[in-house]
Amino acid sequence: MAEIKSNNNQLDDAQNAESQETKGFNFVEEIVYNDLKDGKNGGRLNTRFPPEPNGYLHIGHAKAICMDFGIAEKFGGTCNLRFDDTNPVKEDVEYVDSIREDIKWLGFDWGNREYYASDYFPQLFDLAVRLIKEGKAYVDDQTSEEIAAQKGTPTTPGTESPYRNRTPEENLDLFMRMNAGEFEEGSRVLRAKIDMSSSNMHFRDPIMYRIIKHPHHRTGTKWKVYPMYDFAHGQSDYFEGVTHSICTLEFVPHRPLYDYFVDELADESYRPRQIEFNRLNLTYTVMSKRKLLQLVKEGLVAGWDDPRMPTISGMRRRGFTPRSIRNFIDRIGYTKYEALNSVSLLEYAVREDLNSIATRVMAVINPVKVVITNYPEGKTETVEMENNPEQEGSGMHQMPFSREIYIEREDFMENPPKKFFRLAPGGEVRLKGAYIIKCEDVVKDADGNITEIHCTYDPETRSGLPGSQRKVKGTLHWVSAAHAVDATARLYDRLFNVENPAAEPDRDFREMLNPDSLKVVKGIKVEPFVAQNATPGTKFQFQRIGYFTPDLDSTPDNLIFNRTIALKDSWEKEQKK
Image 1 (tube, rainbow, N blue to C red):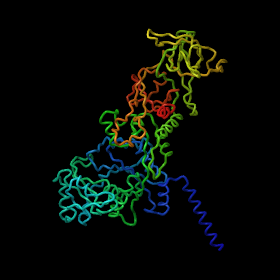
Image 2 (image 1 turned 180 degrees about the vertical axis):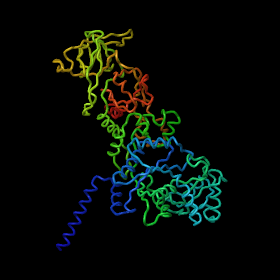
Image 3 (image 1 turned 180 degrees about the horizontal axis):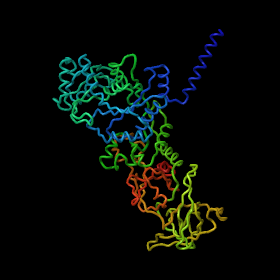
Image 4 (image 1 turned 120 degrees about the horizontal axis):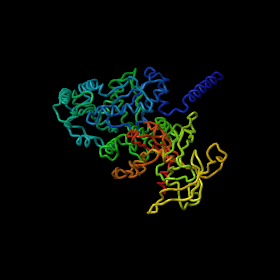
């Protein structure tokens, strides 16, 4: 009995040790961990990211990228980049280049493991020929509508095609002639002969090949037939040595068919395994590549990299950081259940990262002039501004101060309500990094609009002087009028004004676009330091306004800044009013 108890204790200890080792793993990581521990596939780990080169990647793809490349990194494996280029009508080299750029920007690298489904067209074609000869595939002359109708429903079996019992010889002859270009597109397809009464609709004689006569971006006009995803994907995984084919939940019903085709090639020594996780869905966003392409083609956005788009290139142009996107994906995690994630969580991750790296600067979006009447005319002095209080060693930069400055028009009110701690007649505020000023008078035009605010300053209140400790309730940002540089600000907001556009299939999704998703403000005023450092990729915090980055269109003579995000999330409050 003592020996049995000792063995049980050892087993408990081993299980506890393993539990500690896998603590914090998501369910996919646990599967991979156990497969490696069991020595499957010779202890190898090889994942792949298989984008279709028919559009730009979006935030949903970023989640898959982080999974595919991240899990390979975590467990010492490799991850391939494989372009699923099986439909030349929709594909373009532009998309291939953009996909490469996006993956690298997120911080991942596939080394020399860049592949294409088209690399395997000869092997796939040979496999199709073999299945035809073995009586497992046939050429069907029905139209796509006829094939769809005779597939039945999930609760009623399908009916067999009238061409299902053609001889292997006839099917092989027709298939070869399909690839020779003798038949028109849509006139014939090659189908697997499986089971028209299967409860899994994907098993009801799925299409393996269709005729496409459009030139391919890599193979030209060599092929006239192209494999369908369900036939090409698993086989490409197998040809590449992929061990774990990780995809999203909509492929769960495809998995038996994936395994069915892989069984035609695999043996006991190796086979890829498909694992599914939940896709990323965001509020106030659409993830359909078809709809995103429609927005681009109809000019409803300025392109795939429009900063309002959920594309990785759009987020990069807007000023999002790779770390913020990866942190967001880590926070929402990977499960087996579909969810709608709040875009506010993504924005929080962006703010959190930018707060730690963005340089603090002064910019005035809606300027009104302030004249400090007791400050000497023609005098200019410099004040020291901290670059980033969150970043040790970030240093300081100098900013000019003069008799005339700009402040935000919204920071002044003639008849302010209670608890208005900004500038008002007779009131005092501190100019950040400079002096305390007091409003003495205002100047208006013929229409009653304020054109100037006249103030006095307390020369003892500059930092380092005895009066600098004097307290006032309001602190304003500002720029020197004589030194300010004109710029343009593009203020971006949610692309849609409906929380879940996909939940309203009866509405045209374009009707749900937010008309205020972009506001262009010209004539903003920025301090000279901003203009001098406005290079692509620079992250600024315009103090009290938000995070901004120079746009790709920005030049030294025409400064354009994209608002990456406001300092606080005011959207949710506005929607609940």
